[in-house]
Structures are given as structure tokens and as C-alpha cells.
Amino acid sequence: MTRRSLLCSLLAALALVTVGPGLSRAEPPKPAPASDVVSIVDRVQAFYDKTTVFKADFRQLYMVKAYNKTKESQGQVIFKKPGKMSWRYTNNGNRVVSDGKLVKIYEAENKQMYEQQMENSQYPAALSFLVGGAKLKQSFKLRKLDAKKFKFAGGYVLEGMPKDPTPAYQRILLFVDAETSQVRRVILLDAQGNRNQFTFDHPTVNVKVEDGEFVFAPPPGTTVVKP
Image (cartoon, rainbow, N blue to C red):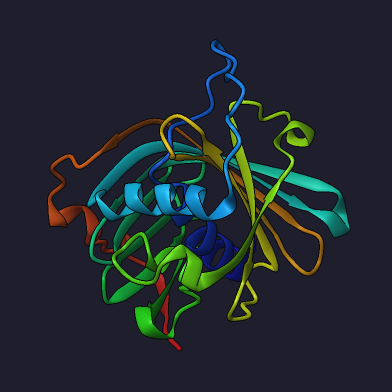
């Protein structure tokens, strides 16, 4: 995945699922009750609003349509309001860190780190509501899709079209658990037909996390790239 893909799709989508548990294969979901999109979004928003810290393992599947290739990554992620986040990729040593003001993207293989001010980064509305910013209904045009077609009988599938265009994605799919109103999976689709999917496992919320988690200094010899 390129640096732009890592920044745009990671920051945009990941945030949307950061308060949802991973999908359980052992217990199939129960059928979801009927509900309109407004009430679903309001319940999801209420859950995000009361979440100050989120911590989980993550699994990412990134499909590049032009090459018909899929890249799989995994690691741990922590979000803390306002604006802080820490991604630790266990399969390649990459790191994505923000202290709320500066975003740092470290690529271990290339020994490079990109720095960008949060306000100038591809930090779209998709992430801002998680860290205390915009609301879902303000950020997206939302509609409910047929969950059965996605084999997601235990909840709802919402499609979101960003009201403010972003190069990170054209539309986003949110898989919402009907019982808890938590987002369990996110799929991002961009203009090139690429697909970025995130699943979060073993989540915990509102736990104590020291601010040192959101400070990162690259190894000696790393090239630092700034806009």
C-alpha cells in the first residue's frame, strides 16, 4: 500500500469502526429488527459520543483492483479523544501516530516518516466525530442497504456518501450491530474500485491510556519528509 493509501484510507475508515467489536464466527448474529436510518445513526452516534478511548486488535484487507491483489495487515490500534491515535502494525513494523496536532506515518521498509499537521492532512469528517468533531449525519448522506445481501442478519448495513468530496474514498459501508449499535465492520470504496476493509477484535473502551502512547520517534537513519 502506498503512503497516500495508508494515510487516506486508514485515517478515514479506521476511525469509523473504532468503537465496534470484531465479528464473531462462533455465534451467528440474530435477525435485526426493522428500523429507519435516522434512528440507527442516532444510536450509533450516541455510542461514539460517550466513548473517550478505544483499544483493539485490527485486521485490514486492502484490495487493489488494477492488479487484482489483496494485502492483509494486522496490529493494534488506540484512539483517545481529542484527536489522538496510535496504530502499531505487527506484520511490517509500520506506525501511524497522532498527538492531536501532528500526524506521523512511519514506513519501516523504506525507512521514511511523513509528518503533516492534522488540519492539513487527509483527516476527513469520517474520523472527526470519533475524536470529538463532526456528526455522522452532518458528514454523510446516509441510506440503509439490505443487510441480507451482505449476509449480515444481525444488524444493519449503512451506505455513506461524504458530503465533502475526499480522495480517500467515494463511499463507505458501515456494518452496525442491532443490539449494541456498535459498528462491527467498515468497507471503503474509492474511485479506482479499490476496497479497504477493517475488522476489529477484542475491543475495550474508556480504559486508561497514557499520552506517551501517542508520541513516536523513528529509529536513527530514518528520512523525515515534511510538506
